[in-house]
Length: 113
Image (cartoon, rainbow, N blue to C red; front, side, top):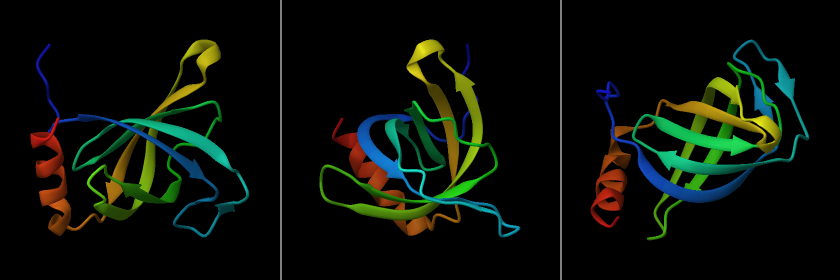
């Protein structure tokens, strides 16, 4: 199968917590404390798994710290969710408005894999 994505997905292991979700129309879901495990990252977004069911088309703030201590602060939009049996859910998300100044972080990370 031919890869159609614009950006290469890079494997990564991060554990984060989603506390609040929001939509552009002002709707909020607060105090979730949903643990997520990020398994890949690219310039476009992240893939993660969680036991919690989170709604599609909602956003959350993410602080992603790489092993070299570089940090990305971004808004992430949940694009899709797929149930994975008793193991929870798999999510695909995109970074919203991530400045290109962060591109070097992904390039350095890819070189050090």
